[in-house]
Length: 426
Image (tube, rainbow, N blue to C red; front, side, top):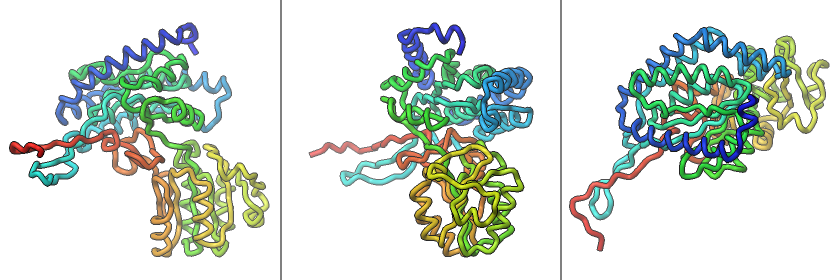
């Protein structure tokens, strides 16, 4: 934490957050008046500005990564933090992808007629000022900003201290791009302090901030949910399961499970528990592929009997989001036991089945109550970009408002429009 942040008094931080929130609300009023074309042009210019600023952004990221390594940050967290030319190009491309999506603002959800004869319609509108509190991943700075702008919302961003320099460089470029197209600077603001009191001030800013979205570890999400006086759109940790049914194709099972765990171990859609059907004929092949791929396996007694390299699992392993090359493995007796294990231990993020039996696949898709349920695909596809949403502001695991990857539509609410012809209620 900087000396400036350490010396910032809580009352000063609260005033700072309130001032930024008021400016954001004023900017949102102007942003809401822009048509789809104007918002799209602003985002494309912001994407170009990110590309032009690549040397400065990558230099800032190298500074953050060096500090994180010196602080003993884990490999998985470093992977979330680190940018290279390819990842930065992907961030800019995601902003452009959002610019190309249909604008949800003004969409008519449905129409009906009231008993008294008035014409009723529900129309999508922006939520207002959205506060995003996030850790580690600097891509959230651009993704959140792009999604908020395109959906007509203002954004107040508070990134983690581990990515402070990268976030500032990305925000500076993005804001410059918006300004070049006449979008108010306060439409997307990044808190200029890493003082932890700023998080509390955001959580308490009822009436100024319309919704808070936390993106980070269990500790951050728990604090936001416990302390917020503002509506929260949150996701729990990603304890994601893959169940290999006895009718699964062995080659598919090996390829999909290896990808689900090892493609990127530090993302929330990474598989954390593998369930192997006792009647599946190639459990040894699936297990060997993971072990040989560098994954540590922790299993129950029946899983340990498959391969001597599997370590014993503790009770806590079934409820752990490793975000690393570590995986829990259990053997189950059929679909019902798999469903029971998932119901007991899943965080409601993403759960998958691998099977050649279509009826079993459909039963799994219908009965697993998670935000994302998959059949015969890697859980690493749990991503707004992969779902064709351009980008995501997070994956919501709750049951209200929005669920799964939250993109443009999830950042809107609606209002009723009533068109009458002189009706007066009796």
